[in-house]
Image 1 (cartoon, one colour):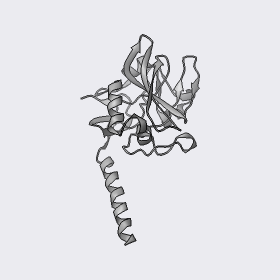
Image 2 (cartoon, rainbow, N blue to C red; image 1 turned 60 degrees about the horizontal axis):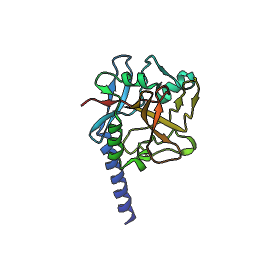
Image 3 (cartoon, rainbow, N blue to C red; image 1 turned 60 degrees about the vertical axis):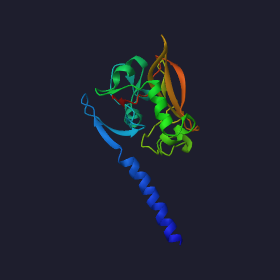
Image 4 (cartoon, rainbow, N blue to C red; image 1 turned 45 degrees about the vertical axis):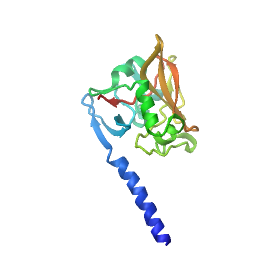
Length: 196
């Protein structure tokens, strides 16, 4: 009897993996030849990696090129608006909300979207949808950096005022996807979403 239960559990796990795998794909950025994983969540195709296009106004965390390989680049808001390749764009705050709603709501979306490794103190997620969020940290206008490994922030295209825009964030010790109005000079990660 236990053998049959085990078979059912394995079959269910493989079926869940298949649901993710059939939505996974790749996209090649013609500007620099980099290839990104993509994943379809909530009817939208998202890059499943942070953007790593060397646009003017972007930096590697800590000014260390190795961190770009791990986390992608960090962008100020003005640069983030223009950084996505043709056919993709910086998501609006509404598109971020649609993403978090599609995975069960803002309160648990961080757990489901975070990568299964790479977060401080084993604060990893379950990566149920292959979105694979990594904690790229943040850069500040004074040239300093903070929190890579602990948290990640991502820009939206939604501006609040002349100097602030809405950003989303995830922390190693929280399961939600939060938001805040961030100074547009801050450097955050970018996830591009495919145009309709």
